[in-house]
Image 1 (spheres, rainbow, N blue to C red):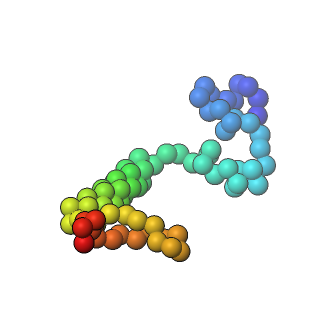
Image 2 (cartoon, rainbow, N blue to C red):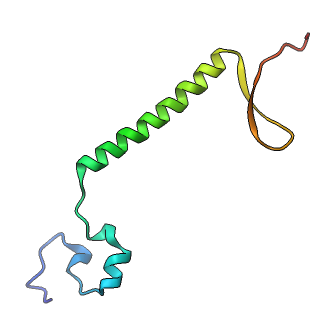
Image 3 (cartoon, rainbow, N blue to C red):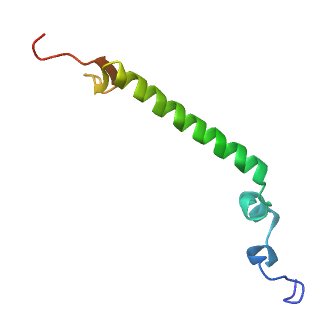
Length: 83
């Protein structure tokens, strides 16, 4: 491919590469799909919102995140030092 065949903004697409390089680096040659990107962004925001909601719910009930003897995170009920 000569310089006359390339268009501005093509970047690495204009270079002559092997089929293996194109397979390994698929994201360089695929066109962006805004619908799929939007659905992925919506799913990520939904997951983060649900995690935040659950954490807020447990903290409102008097639970807090603690680390047990095995190193796992568990939610335990907050107790007074007087109990």
